[in-house]
Amino acid sequence: MNKIYKINVRGKKVICSVLILCAGCFTSLKAQFSSPFSVGLGFGGTNLHGDFKNEPVGYAGSANFDFHLSPFFSAGINLQAGNLKGEANFGSFKNDFMAGNFNIKIRAGQFYAAKKNYGLYSLKKQGLAGYLAYAYAGVGIGLIRSDVNAKINEGNTRQLFDDAYGTYDKTATVIPLNVGIDIPFKQSMTGPTWSVNINYQLNVSTADRLDGFAPMYSEHKDFYSYWSVGIQKALFVKK
Image 1 (cartoon, rainbow, N blue to C red):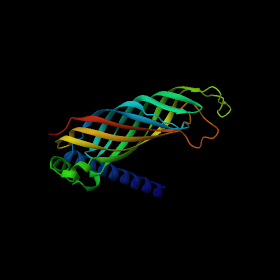
Image 2: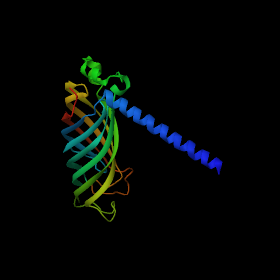
Image 3: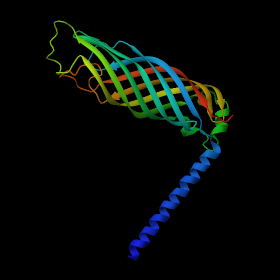
Image 4: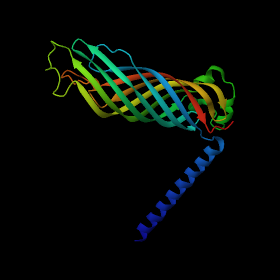
């Protein structure tokens, strides 16, 4: 009984110590960086990589809402709406989709900027290195809602496909992989207040019918690319 009591007391002490440490780290971070919130709009092209040989460019628009834990690390939500297209000798399709995901992004400056004073680093002129500090990679998880209108050309056999083909209206999971850069043109102590965003996003889907078809010879799930250019505005910044 005494042994169990001692273990419980030690466990409580460990938990208290961890909470105190976390609180100290949060206070330290908050003291040197006031986390802003940023919003952004983008527009660009899409390509679906599925079962169609030809992959004509579609289009999509996007909106971003990001919370910056530091000038170089953020967590946020990305919303998209647009279309995906494809053509082949057996048919064609168009997918009017909507998608959303939660993602995190880490920028190069997180590894080489002066972590004790992000604000000073953000305000100083760093030349090329200062711009490259905002190059990033990111990953997330989300959903895509497809509204597919597809058809098979006359004279092509339908035995290549499963029983449900030609239309597809369903939600599937996607894993977005991002690479890009925020090019600042106005700075503050908490990072860029205005920036141009250039982004490439590869969306890996759990579905095999974003194009409306699921051929027997399909070797992978469908996935699509979205590359965009946009503008971002930071809110609640420390000037």
